[in-house]
Length: 182
Image 1: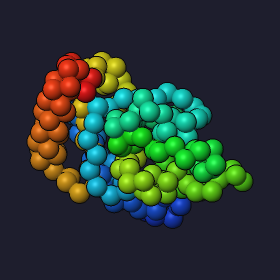
Image 2 (image 1 turned 60 degrees about the horizontal axis):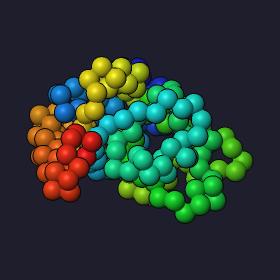
Image 3 (image 1 turned 135 degrees about the horizontal axis):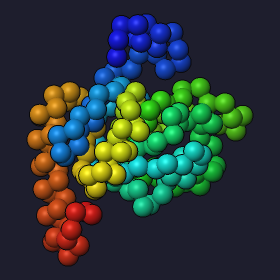
């Protein structure tokens, strides 16, 4: 981001967040900012095109262990009502958004999405072009990905991702699942 962007962001509820990196197994790199827990997340990357319902999406067992990209431009605007989660865990390993809303507008919100993700240890990245990412995923099919708030060296993170992918595929083969949908 530019110095002008940083100056403007520093006066918003988003503030200046630490840098983060998203690396795809084919070497594609997206730079952004951390917006939930610090750390690293690895998994297959998928996307969701919903305009509403992120509470249901992040608790969907089908997204367990995945890195999930949300295509709607701002996520988190109505916050999280813990009663509606009904004790369900947040399932993705990581979340990718264009812009995280840090000031939810719903009177029913008990916690912001970023806070809920951080509380559950989910690593998330914002301030990247999720439309471009989604097109890339559509064009290249199932890919493994990594998000890191620690390792901002693309080559190093790609090496870790390759090790994760190898282990995931070995586990799937041992379980008799095969294929890349580990």
